[in-house]
Amino acid sequence: MQVIIVLLHIVVCFALILIVLLQKGKGADMGAAFGGSSQTMFGGAGAGSFLTKMTTAAAIIFMITCLLLAFMFGKENTPSSIMDNVKTTAPASTSQSSAPATQQSSAPAEEQSK
Image: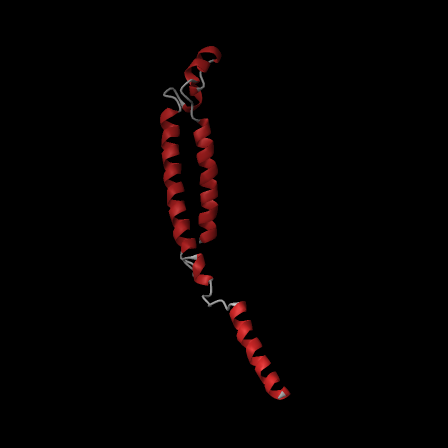
C-alpha cells in the first residue's frame, strides 16, 4: 500500500510541475500577437479553464498523498525525541575516585613496613 501511494505521489508531483509550466503567464498575450495564437490546441476558449481545473485536481491529490504518507510513515515505533535513546548515567569523576584509592593503598603499605 505504501509503495502504491509513493508512486502515485511521484507521478502527481511531475504532473503538477508540467501543468504549471504549461500555463500561460501574464505576458503570453503579447507573444500571440506576433506569432499567432497558442490557444487553438485546447479549443476556442483557450487553455485557461482546462489547465486551471487540472492544476486544482493535481494539487488536491498531491496534498492528500502528502498527508497519507505522513500518517503511514509517522506511525512507526521510533522514539519521539533523540534524547529518548540517551542513557542517563552519572559520570564518575576521575580526580575524586583516584584520591581515595591512593590513600587506601598507601595505608596498608605503611602498616606492613612497621
